[in-house]
Length: 359
Image (tube, rainbow, N blue to C red; front, side, top):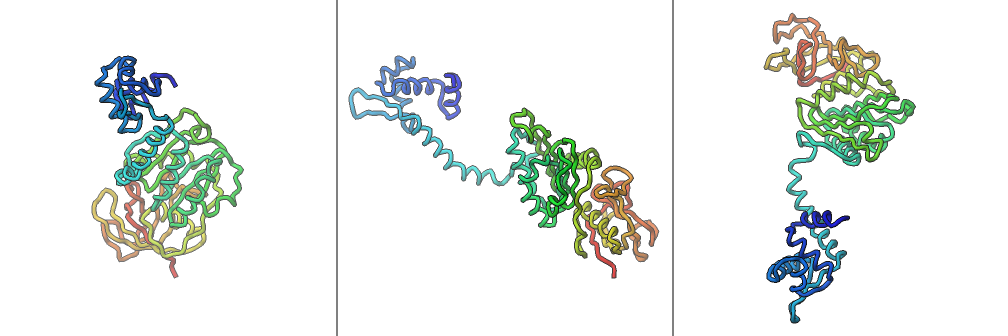
């Protein structure tokens, strides 16, 4: 480390430029009179006495004033560093207490520079997930987040997993790791989203190669994260092979995550079950929610093979509404379509859906 770097690091510890020069002079002498330090550092003797008192308080030097003339002795560098480290470590709990009110994931936009931080953020996002996770991850790294994925699934969260860079991973490896899994032999970016408002993106090289020079991005914006979700389902998910699908969940069950409701509706239809629906909905582009009931007669979706969508990322429930429903101008007993948040193609935007098996 050159002199300029040493001086810069000491200034980061709160020493002024003249204080750095004085301290380094004392350090080079080991022990010296104030007059000697003043001459070599190009400062006044009075200044040396003043600075030495400050350095003594911080543990850098020891002022020996019980002898004449007064001398200043540099403390061993390992003791100085150990004391500084101890001070910083003792400060950490208080800093964490003050910092804990706003987690790192809640910053609207953040650049991430290391693979370790990316992996830490993935596990942090999984731990926070309440409704839905989408994750694209290189196959070699799946093991590093597997425990958190299983715990997320166990909490009832919808987990959509794309494993990239290896199309030979055994299907048995995925049971309980996600709700739906696809694998793709090509490399793809790492993409993670949680509950439609937290997102993480990183180039594939950043995770597979150290010192790649690449950077990742963390987002916390409800307006932008759905765009990442759309890229996941529109650009990468269709290219991959479906290798695992969870079993139909026991019903009745209420879903506030519409994609989860569509997945379970699809699984129960494919199993030959007749399913009743009660949904809190509003006609698209209107304000007031109301409840409709009916029977599930179909789905439009791109989560599972075979897909039944008319465009990428489409998710809709097709319902034969009960004859006594009349919450808008749609004719009763008519087939209607339910979409998720922000729906505009379907008849209704849906806030929550309850699925129940018909007797």
